[in-house]
Length: 82
Image 1 (cartoon, rainbow, N blue to C red):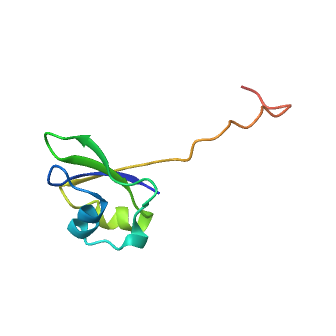
Image 2 (tube, one colour; image 1 turned 60 degrees about the vertical axis):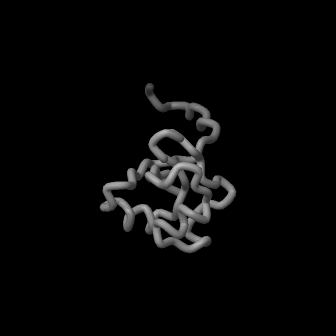
Image 3 (cartoon, rainbow, N blue to C red; image 1 turned 135 degrees about the vertical axis):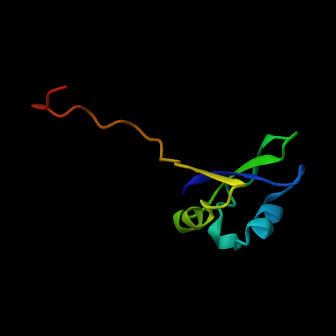
């Protein structure tokens, strides 16, 4: 799921972000939630489905970031050069 930042009213909660962005509860990662990044400017982060991020990318109040999964590296394979 892509990660995006959005400017909302300070003190907003996830339901406020869903409503302000015109999303459904299924389109956001409710386990990740709404993370307050800068209380003074009302900048928050949340994770959304890829199709939602593509739709919101044109909104000047939204910035979309990649959020790749983090996991262990694959072991080196014999015969491959580095």
